[in-house]
Structure formats: C-alpha cells, structure tokens
Image 1 (cartoon, rainbow, N blue to C red):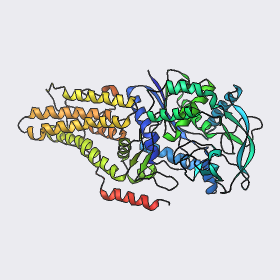
Image 2 (cartoon, rainbow, N blue to C red):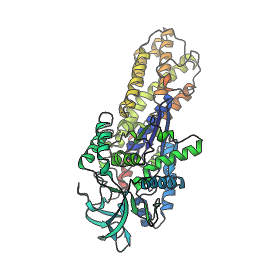
Image 3 (cartoon, helix red, strand yellow):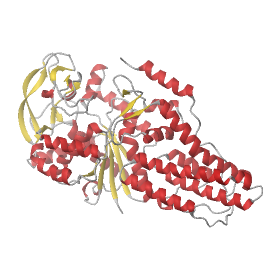
Image 4 (spheres, rainbow, N blue to C red):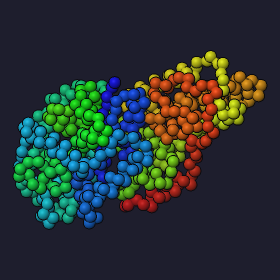
Length: 555
C-alpha cells in the first residue's frame, strides 16, 4: 500500500486564518489527502501552530501581554476554524508543546554532535534602548530587491525575497524605531554552501521534470546564486532553548524549529493512535509532500532538506507543490491593513456554505501565478456553477424520482454505456490532474460530470416523454440517479459537505474511489426527499461584504 506524509505550512499563531492562506496552503492538501484516503492509501495529514516566530513576541509587546496568551487564543481559533471548514488534518499540533521542544532539541543536538554546525562569532544589530539583539523581525528596513520600506530582517513580505539583516538598507529597530548598532554575538550556523553540489544533483537534476516550474525555478535561482551559511540560533528568550552549555538567552531559529514541528506532530499523532510514527518519516518508500505558499519555498526546498540530509535519519521531500499568492479586490491581501477575508468571520456570516468558498478558491487557486479573489467572482461561481449546474441537476432528478416513481430508483432495461464511458473518462482525468497537483483542472473535470448529467437530462426530457413512454422515463432517471451517486464520490475531495448531503438524499453509505464509474444504485432503492444543495448569493450580500472590507481596512 502506498504511504504518504502530507504537511501543510504551519500558520503563525498570532492571527486568524484568511482566504489567501486557504488558497495557498490548506485547501490543496485537504483535497489531495481526501482523494488518497478514498483510494485506500496510507496517508497522514499533519499541521499545527507555529508559535515561536518573532512576530508573536512583537505582537505581545505591542498588546502588553504575553506570547503565551497570544498563541493560546489563536491556536484554538484557527484549529476550530479549520475543523469547521472541513480541513481534515489527522493531527493539528503546536510548537509550544513539550514534545515539540524535546524533538527539536534532540534534532539540533544530533546535528551538533555530528559536527554539522559551525560556531561563529558575528556582528549583529543591537538596540541600545531596548537592550536586545534584534533577531529577524525585530529589525526592519528597505528591501534591496524591490525597495519596499518595511522589509523584515529575514524576508521581504512585499516581494517574497529571503533576506539577512545586513542586506537591509537603512535598518531600524522594530521595537524603538531607533538605528541599531553592531555588537558581537555567537551563533551556530548551517553551512549551506557545503551542500550546493548535493542540492544541484537532488533538485536541479533530480526534480527537473516533476516539480512545479515556479518551485523549480526559484530553487535553481537560489542555488545558481551561491548559498551562504545560515544561522540556526537566535538571541531571544521565546522559543526552543539551544541545548548547549553557555547558550543561555539563545533559542533555535524558527526555520529550524518550525519544520521539525511536522515531525513532532506526527509523534503526537502516534501517541494518540498507538501507531508508529517512524515509517512516515524514515521509510524510503514513503512520499513526503509539503504544501506551502511561494514565500516558504526556500525553507522547504533548501534549508529543511539540508537539515534532514545532515541529520541522516529522515526521508527527503518527494514534492513541494507550492502555490503563488492570492490577491483580493485589486490589492494584495494584508493582515496588517486588515485587507482580508477572515475564515472565522466567513463561517459565522455564511453558515453551511463552506463548500461554496472551497469551490471558489479552488477554481481560482494560484497554482502557477498569482490569482485574485473578488466577491463578484464568488457570487458567479456559486450562482452559475454550483446552483445552476450541480445543484440544479441533483434537485431536478430527485424531484422527478419522487414525483413519478414514489421516491424509488426505477427499473431500467437500457443497455447504453455512454454515461459509464463518460464517468470513466472523467475519473481518469481527475486522477491524472490530482496526481500532478493541478487542482483547478481536477475540479473542472469533476464538474464536467454534473454538466454531462444536466445535458443528458435536458435532452431526454423525461418529464414530457414519461406521459407516453414510461420506460423511457425510467431509463433516464435510473441513469441520472447513477450519475448523482457517482457525483457523491467524485466531489468528496473537493466539496465534502456537499458529498455528505448527496449521500443523505440518496440514503447511501460513503463509497470508495474504486466505486466511481460504476452502476451503484439498485432498482427499487428508496431515496430521500429532494433538498437544495446550494442557494443563490444575492447582489446585496456581496456588496455588503465589499463595503465591510473597505470600512475595516487600515490605511
């Protein structure tokens, strides 16, 4: 049986989840793992809160509270939102958990004991007013790549470029806004430059054809530019303590700490289920797949693989299908400006409509280039596709079966195989797209089944023909009922709540992927009453959302 370890990027526990994150790193792996489970594959889907980022300590300082209060609030909020939205993690962990601290410490210690890290004394920016070394996001300045004035000391959020503090132009403290000074400090570095040849062989030569072009291109650019040693520790008091004598006041760099969170989450899942975690991280037959946004490519494709390689006990990623960014209503999504659609608010304001947002975001997923969400597009996807195609087909068939056949699947003498051939063709197309991480295409192929059913029903007009030819009506509605039963399978990875409602209407147990493309319902099977799968979204609703967005935006 194939085995898969699927991870989704750990979100910072300093704010709620927004639709850009859903489209970038969470819906795709949920579709993928649901599909794998339906095939009967051995798959584990892992995520959790990243609770040691500098952004969290900065927020705590600004709000005059503790990092613990910040992470507890948002960990619970995001965990609950993911669950309500149908993101089917096998385990959602958190990096503040003692198990994670132990796992990360042991990982670092192994690297240290194997001589894989180098101890270096360097000059680092220091805020004399705050009396602190300025790690990562404690320092801001002008990005040397795009000129953005508020780039951080580890990354520019405007262009996505990974940076070091000394690359910033006109650096200033994020704590006091003062110009920092340079002071000596000691840290442990990962010598990335020593792994250039290996990375060239592993990525440039080994994954030229199977990794997405945007991922491969960014990796190649990094490697071709020459890699530099990168510090794996920071001068901070919040995080996983460096487990070495004389390292007081130092913690593990969050980009060593955070991806190890995938491993510790799997260990936590193991403790809960009693199943061994090791095959998911140590068996070469396992495929490790990271779903992330493009701003995390360098960490998941270069830094984390080098750490795994240096450690020696773990498998390497098989694929890292990173998405680009999703923009919104003509602007970049910005948490600082409150220019976002927040998941927890959507769930409150659109109860029972999880699948509408899942559909809209998947249809416009930024797989190879940035995409854009607008409320008008959301409305169009709902009204013209979900309501008019999928929902309309299912409702018409269920109403007609109830009206003409007392709510029972009619007998059929038809020997036609066209509909079965269509289902087989679409099943293969869905599989091929999902195996290649083309989720938009897979979703469209799923919807083609509903489009076919609608055309078939309209062309045969059973509501008219049944008056003079009951057998024709029976054949037609039996076929349509079979298509709907197959739709309950095909749409489950994409629209799990809809799949469940279809099964309830058909009085049908959950099926497996192998059942797709077959005649499922026996003649005489009693189905339930028709119910609408989707409702129209009116202009007033989307206009109100746009106005709300503008009213709450900052700056």
